[in-house]
Amino acid sequence: MKKENKLRIIHLCVAVLLTAALAVSLGLFAAKTAALNTELGAVYDAAYFALVDNLGDLENKLKKLDVASGGKLQRELLEGVYTDSEVAVGHIATLSGRNGEITPALKFVNQLGDYAGYLSKKAEAEGLTGDEKDTLRQLGDVVGQLNDAFLAAGESVSEGGNIYDAIGAELGAIGDIYDAVSDNNVEYPELIYDGPFSDGLNDRETKFLNGKETISADEAVSVAGEIFGGKFDYAGESDFNIPSYILTSGERNLRLTKAGGYVLEYSDGAVSSGAGKSMDEMTASAGALLEELGYEDMKAVWASESDEAVYINFAYTLDGVVYYPDLIKVKVMPDTGAVSGIEAMNYIYNHTERDKAVFADIELALPEGFDADNVGKAVIPTDFNTEIAVYEAAGEYNGGYYYLYFDAVTGEEREVLRVIEDGNQGMLIV
Image 1 (tube, helix red, strand yellow):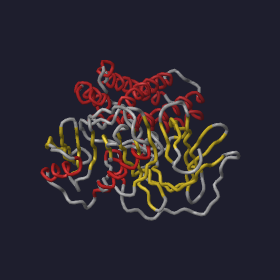
Image 2 (cartoon, rainbow, N blue to C red; image 1 turned 120 degrees about the vertical axis):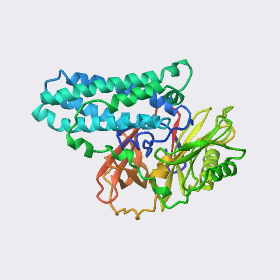
Image 3 (cartoon, one colour; image 1 turned 90 degrees about the vertical axis):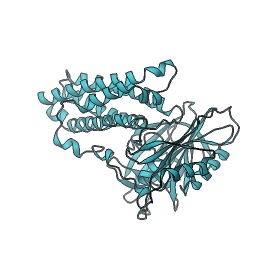
Image 4 (tube, rainbow, N blue to C red; image 1 turned 135 degrees about the vertical axis):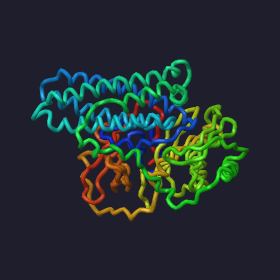
């Protein structure tokens, strides 16, 4: 793969997590959304199956800690719990788009990961105390309840449904999920609430909407028709996290922000008849629609392609710097090139006028033998709800393909992504 505008078949495997935000696809971090019956392909089913597998691993590691006596083994198991918790957060955040009631699970898993990370730093030298083992035992029980609740919510998947609909329908399971993480009596050390992803996920600011004028429901209906054509009906309002109007038109579902009337989510139930349009054509049509919607200066940074649908991630770009926090996901029909899905939560949360990112004139400490195809400038999110400017180096190394991220001022290596070519139809646009 050489230079820009070439496509590469990839499946992203995160070697060092960029946070839940980047774990999905080079800058994609997990977003919480309000309840709306919208669907972006099989993303939610994939997140569900990965989550229940992940929660099973978490419960297993916590049960092993109950009998592990060696400090080194305890540390290794705790580090595994910490890593698994970070991954689970991304999956739960994806699923929370269907129903806000499962968002307490985010807080619980974040706190579990933070607690495990705290204990791992002392386990090998000091070992775990009886009280700490008791707390971990209780946490393992809650993880088991949480997994059972998600399994109950997903029973319809095996019968031909999808988890996105199931979570909305299985209200009993939703209640079990809430109870599992809200009513437990586990006491965490005070420091847990100050760690990454603690309570901040429930207090995110919609920066892009600051100062935008509130529109009425009638105005929202009018805007919907102008953008997507046809007649839309007012179906309700959602005040969870991002206040918005819910509109429908046949199989089309739309969510417009009350502030400014911006498209937050859109889905179209149309089915593709197969391939037809080129990736360049689909990227161009999707980008043109985003600009029409008021999302300007967006660049396609990743795509996943099949005969049924193409998913393209766009990130805001200014002066050659890619801002991965300002991400919008678009679903395109490969036969017609028409946009059939949009999700703009990350952009609405994060896009704002920023101070100009500082990039020092430094020489990157690339590994010997690393064959860089491209070196660019980017801004990525951190575990602490902040952003850092980085140089992004992509290239071949020892038979593999990697993305390395270096602090733009100090040159310190901050993150690593490894690309695995296993035949899955993902493509990186660089």
